[in-house]
Image (cartoon, rainbow over all chains, first blue to last red; front, top):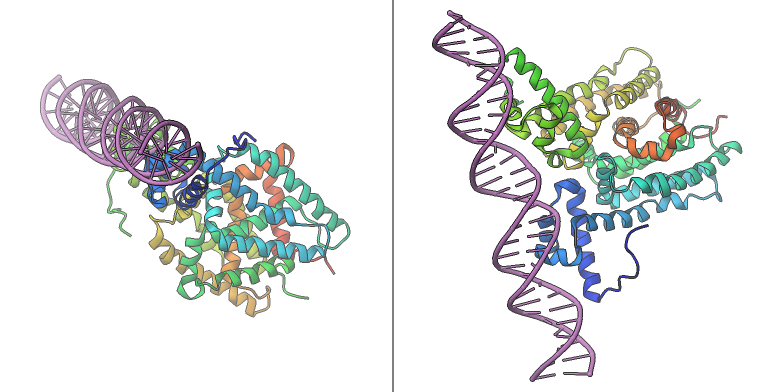
Length: 211
Length: 211
DNA sequence: CTAACGTTTGTCCAATCGGTCAAAAATTTG
DNA sequence: CAAATTTTTGACCGATTGGACAAACGTTAG
């Protein structure tokens, strides 16, 4: 809301260089956190000098903020697509699948977000209690509607959403641990398919044996 | 394994002060990460001067390492207790409950661990691929046995353990987000009981409507 | 060509970082 | 008590941090 996004009018070089910096910053911020990352690191990863980087982003925080806002938008897209049309169980299943794919394809974005939340979300707190809460409340209402029609079991929709976030993002945020525990065989590229199969079964049927 | 724990023989004051420092360091490390935390911050939180703190722990890393080793031991206790005796579903249910209680009662420990893993676990990687993997493999075998007897549904035991970790620790690591989304009413002290109820239902029955 | 504008860099700065050290203060020991 | 030992502190250090700045360089339009 106070992004200062009032048509900054940028040249072609500015567009490209800013993109280069954001890409480098994503790499560095996501693995070291905001305070742990240094401007020098980002500049080197972007292949330019520190003063040159500071020509495109005047403060370290500006880079982080730009990254954060852009991230949140794409990160919540799958939830926004959760729709009232279509079969509820199918809808939920494909939401879980899409979230897991995002954890697989954009782990840095997930870790950047996790880092921010872990440290108390000092820079995005208003967004959480604002836009995010609004969106989740809205989708929780949709899910509640499904429960009323008997299409899915009755539970707490909010905690259901949390559990989907937690289980899917776990494969991005805790990737090191997952791979270490699974070992070279099970921890290879197939681990996301194994996770997808498991999560589908968990969320649909739980652990009680059939019959 | 190379903790340097060869009977350091400490005085009463050393015991107390070291404990005081570790408590303060847990607070600071868990909210700022290793690099984000400063010795001055920890010293101030512990109510002593920086050189005095460095008299008890010679390097910043020593504090973190001591904290980390102690944490891992207590943190994995619930999993170690997972036992072959008793009803499998009951056993799993109480494991989930215990993990959730730990997220509620020791959120700082959870966040400290999450911070370390998020940043690639540079300081505890050997432990993950060693002791932790061994423990998880062992418990996965126990769970597999339960599946063979038909007491619980067949799934991937490793990913089952991951999902329990993810869903329970989420309430510690992402606490800020959880409370922001739930709002003042649902996000109060009762949120852990709501979570417990939801998780029990999820892991036992899934989302398919009964019958 | 040249003036204007956009881009890049080397140098510098104050603040903060983790850590040292010698000396003072407090405590324990005989 | 006094000596020995442990604990605490103020002053200090080199390295790194985020950032400022003017000068140099490159590009483009007239």
